[in-house]
Length: 155
Image 1 (tube, rainbow, N blue to C red):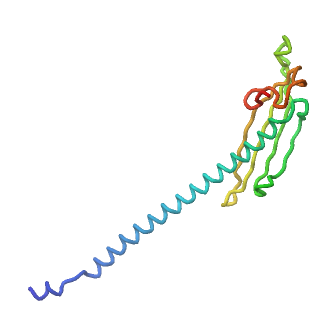
Image 2 (image 1 turned 45 degrees about the horizontal axis):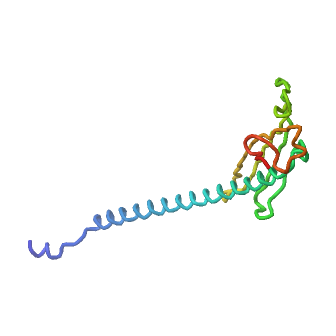
Image 3 (image 1 turned 90 degrees about the horizontal axis):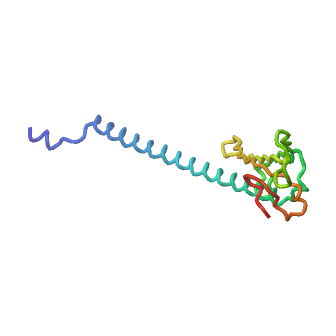
């Protein structure tokens, strides 16, 4: 009996079980690492999309209210050729509201800016902002920036 205990070691079944546990742990860690990298990449792309959107919104806020034109414009970014932008400007008439004086406009611009950027997996990411700029009679004499709720900013 003492002789068989001295020669005792791990059985093949015990070794295989230990290897299965180690392999499962390694694969789980690799999967979690891969998912973390995907999330970091997605966050970077989202940050880039928001930066590009803010750039286009800022460009348009500098336009004088008299130079605003109704319609759709689009283009690409010099810094990021994989991204494109589209701006839709609509003139809204508020006929239900009576014009009281110059400080109470009856017209405004609705501006929608979309930025589309291709993600690493090939799917497009669309980031969008929408705001209104009020059209007042005294805007023609104001500095660039115009009036306006949600993004027009004063000048």
